[in-house]
Length: 248
Image (cartoon, rainbow, N blue to C red; front, side, top):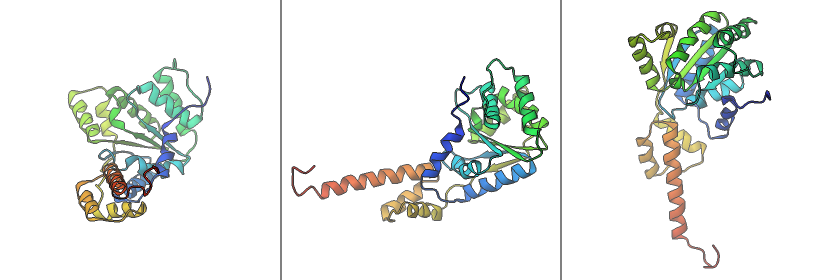
C-alpha cells in the first residue's frame, strides 16, 4: 500500500487562503496551544460551530512540525484515529490488523523517544465514541513528560462526557480526570465583524450593520455577507441592463 494518505492537515491549508482576521477566539486558541505544548498538559476547548476553532489552529499547526492535527469524521473508529496519528508522526501507514495494545504501545514510544515537546490536537472531538476516549487516558499516562493533548468540540462534547461519566462508562472517568483545563471561546465582537468586512474591502452599509448585529460566528458572518453581496449584484444588474439588448 502507498505511504501517501490524505489527512486533516491537508484541509487546513485552504483556511489560510480565505480572509482571516485575528479575533479574541483565535488569539485565545494560539495561547492555549502554546501553553499546552510547553506544559505537556491535556485540555478541552469548547466553541460553537463556525466560531473559528479550526482556523485558529491552522497557522500554529502548519508552522509547528511537532504538532499533529486530526479532525474526527463520522466514519472514524478508534483504530482509524490512532493509526492516522501514527501516520502523521512517522509518515508510515499501519496494517489494519494491528491491535490496539500494539498501537498504543507504538504511539507511546514514538512520542517519548525524544524529550522535545509535542502537541496532539483532536478537532471535532465530540464525534469520539466513549471507547475511543477511554483509550486516550492510557496514551496520556505514557506520554505525560513529552506530549500535550487538545480536544476541541462543540458543547455536546462536554455534555456527553458528563453523561457517560455519570453512567459509569468504562474509561470515561479516567479520561475526564486527566483534563487539566476547560476553555470556552468567545463570540465575535462588533469591532471584529467590522474588521472582517474591511479585510474583504466591503463598504459598511446600514443593511450590513443590521446583519452584523444578528450574527455571532465567522461562519454566520461569511454566509450572511455573501448572500447580501449576491443580492446586491442581482439588484444592480436589473437596474443597469446592457445598452445593447444583444449583449448578454
